[in-house]
Length: 289
Image (cartoon, rainbow, N blue to C red):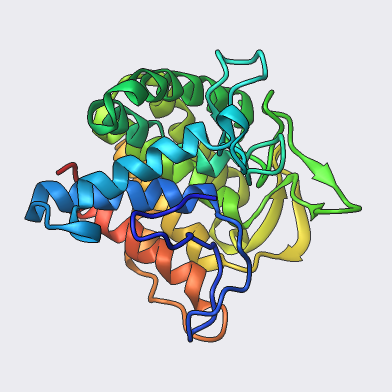
């Protein structure tokens, strides 16, 4: 587990009174915590103790890649043992050896490579390259869809006995295209990202149609009978293709998003968090500090 400078562990789920529902971290959370702290340091400067945002971020990043070394308790959030893509691939959780395509944030890793502890910078530089190559494996070439969880070779992960079905385009997977397009917007380091954004928008606009966006899909594009749990999140993240491509399909996705209100009801949390994030990015206000 990651340990903050004040000794408190970062747990992925807590009750409203602060009591932990689980004691393990969610690696995607740590990535965003670290990036938010680094941006805060640039915007407002550093204070003392836990208000030294930059130092807190560096500690998190260091633990993410070094936890469990030299006999220390715990395990790193990044895999460094498989022989694919020069290693450096993020795990779904520390205890397992598979990934979640939506956790791959090469645009963050590029900044971590500039701002982490000196000894950790080369790791994140290589992680950015590895994640871009991994996303090419995880995203279907004909639809642009990725599975919610995937093996380190990009194959959709499915283990009904322990994890249930996670080989579909479902929930977490909506964030994958969002991250790809944000990476292209910030870095423009790989034209494949623009291409897959166009494939993705074409799939939803011309092959699925707006009226069927609220379904679960296989990565090959088969529409399943079940309705998606987070239809507003689908609309929001589909619009992110406009950050990578300005073609007609992406513009239709963008208009659909701007015509869609925030979700109400007991599942609004995930939908509206992605809504806010995508609105921030698409309005030009989620930028590098």
